[in-house]
Image 1 (tube, rainbow, N blue to C red):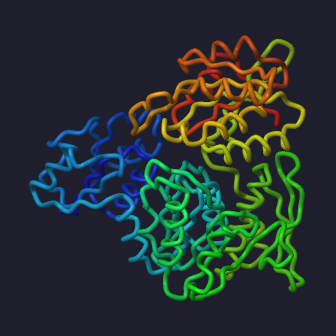
Image 2: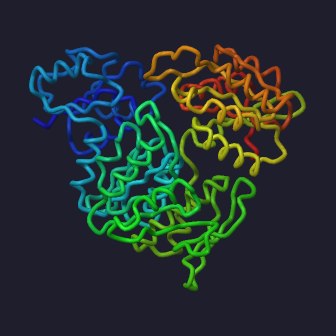
Image 3: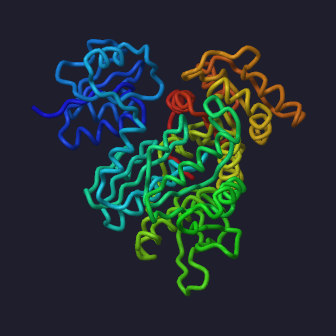
Length: 477
């Protein structure tokens, strides 16, 4: 009989990736989730199609008699009935982060972990697609569905590169000890866990000090947080970090170009060498040029030829919920484009909106934003108001609580109030019930508008509903 592993929180993007890898290696998979629906969760649907047993809701009897290992999402506590049942039977229980670390440590090929407060999903996906296109047969764990990788995980050869998104939440990335650690940026986030900005930086410091012996660090030279982190680590690293930049002349790898239009062109190379290579990206924005440069630098360290790096990056068409086009809909006198984006931190909102302004300069930008977590809303209230005030039309709905209980005095309407103070005359509206947003927006749309559902919760559903309620037309970017 094959090994049997149960995954608690199997509908989550990280746990489902691990379950798919286990299933691909012949492990019998079962799992539970409080609310995941296979009809709307592609990873869960793949698992069930390939034989996984799925239970909606957490119950002790979900742990079958033959289960020998339980993988648990960080969102469940010790009072979870499945955790209690596994403990009562002395079944080994490990966290999602621990299990990913074990898989990475056991892998024979080069190991790459992509960390950073922002951009790690896209950068991980870019590296994965680039290495796939170059024929290196990578294994890739990424925090989103990526069509070119076959989903949120790609199972490659045992000796090919192992690329994993390294999430800092709950210290998860401290279980990873890669040969190459990519750092896109560093700033305060997840303060419900870390408490202070200092706690965030201390965690990133521990992560980088834990890379494999003789491992390399690929660091963004344009981010002040990364610069601060490198200063903290001065004299304590085995090797000098490899710096990539679009601004610094002393960087190890540089990019030159302007992020204009939906498919920006840039040139990258190593100063002092006569090799310069052009890349035409299929995703817009300066932040995506930086993400691509991080991927290119990683490719250089792995010995990938420049033309293969360029071709691989040009083939990347984006990840789900990252400036994803949901459709174009008819409005009186023309059409409007509807997109979805995962941005849920003020810095991500600014980057996404700047990219959309650059790519679709002639369109009116309408943002329907759902705050994610009461603690994050409290901690970054003024920054949320400032970043969102740059929309032409702003809608904010109630906070997506996720794992949290409401915090007294914290509400989403405060974002609207403060945004109007910062930008008098701003066309901003608070719609508490997100289900009312599609109908309301339908009455506001003008020809040429760009509507973006934005946030890390379930606001995407409102973007999809807006598309579904109107007659679809051909998407014209």
